[in-house]
Length: 179
Image (cartoon, rainbow, N blue to C red; front, side, top):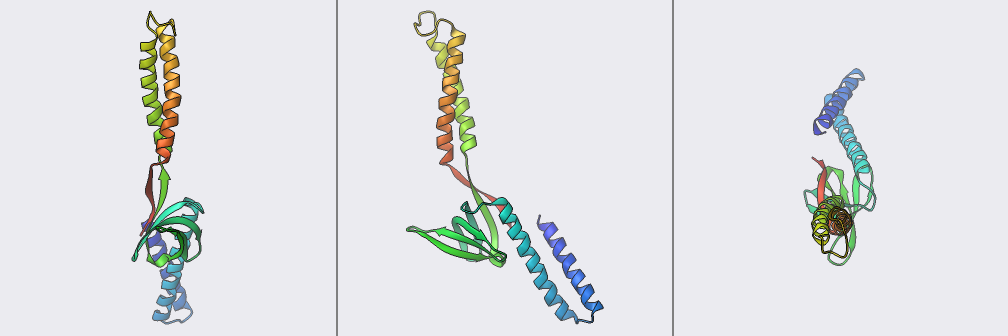
């Protein structure tokens, strides 16, 4: 991703220098215009990436030269990332300019992982307990296989539900942009 940006920036600067020579602009003027156009292209690319990978109101972490900011995404403009930053008492609005952004991270929960782990553990325990409860002397279930199947289904549902609750409370940040 970064190599494409670099190649695109070099191509833009080269094209601007070539056109400027054709129209008689001096090298310094052409380089200044090329650098501005290159920075603008990088800003446009970052804005497009953020709009694609994040949602307004979603939790993000932005790291720049001044520190790390965690909060909810308010908007992405052509030049800034606007956040409502979490403080101890409230949310504070903050606009982080693209030029200072070092990395952007998106928060995600682990609900799916919790469902899978909880479901597998619940299924296993349900099969074992269902099989143990359906022995020859059991008044509940006559056949062991039926007890194992019923216990497995109940265990799967309970385990998956509990796993979803635990997983939804566990969060991590995944990087979506790094300079």
